[in-house]
Length: 185
Length: 235
Image (cartoon, rainbow over all chains, first blue to last red; front, side, top):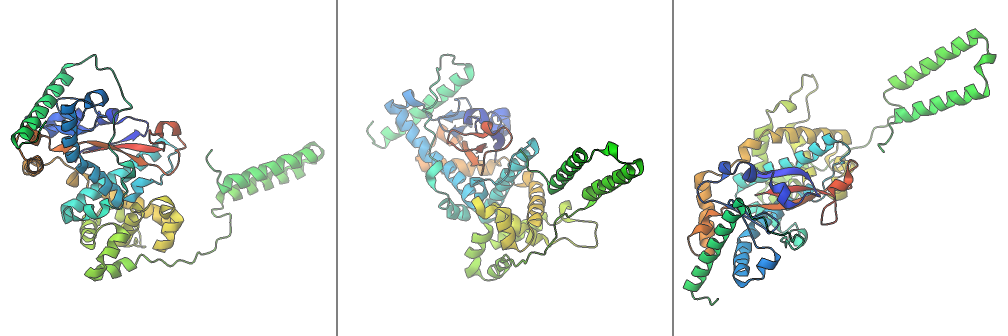
């Protein structure tokens, strides 16, 4: 539904995310308590709940939380797999980038693939994407561990506070549920 | 460095020839009329090089595509998987897509020579989008499609323009009902209802790998996965 492209490969996921609609116009996509899941490379916020980063993710409660989120998030990795499996030009885009126009041209390929992907889902349902998932190996779609980024989180701003409150609430909910169905901590 | 065109190469060679000639036979020794004639000849030559469209002899390349097989495959349901293998989408979706883009302005020309049928152009574009590596190189695609490399480039460009006009129709925020479906899926997956169901969208980044290091600012495209690519964020 929402995407951003055009940044070069050197850009980090977190900075690329700042160009998506979810970051720029959160009210356009979200209402009420709604938020998005993300992996640990993303900054925590009211609208974005990533999994925990390295030191924090060693904690037991956080690990349980992360694991549950990963089970949900595997879907978005499948989505990538389907996109790249179906339109394999995205696995090795054959566009020579020698000037800014070529860069735009390359991004047009990506836009087209996304539009077609959505069109296929609208028309055929999810059937074909399951078929194509297997064609794109899981080699490069592993979860980002976030280990490479060990920033100091000294300056906790308001946005992050709201995010971490939300994340704690989610964790608490999950733990309560697990207890209620009898899984020991 | 960008490669030189054939015209540039020939022109450079000719200028080199002029310089050498003037160095060996200094023009001062020649009578004025001779010089004038020579200048005229040089100018004619220059114009000829500039205005000749094809410097090499042109031979027609034998062409015989196999893309028409797609229509054969589309006829029988048991061959539909072969169609999908070739063009990445089902025959039905292909028909819908063709219907959507066929009236786009890029497929109109003000000429007595009609364009290649839209379905064929679209097929070439889709075939190209479904390949990477050397299978997606222009000569290979041209070989399969039975057309020239220039046509492949032109057709893909047209189709990409046409498909882009469909952007807002297919890339849009979810409606409330669709959101509810996603939230129900989370409920089902987690086994309880709560704040978790509000997370109906997921973000992830991926790298669209490029086939080679870009000529322009190649270093900026270098990724942490040790290849060159573009960052893509999808939800």
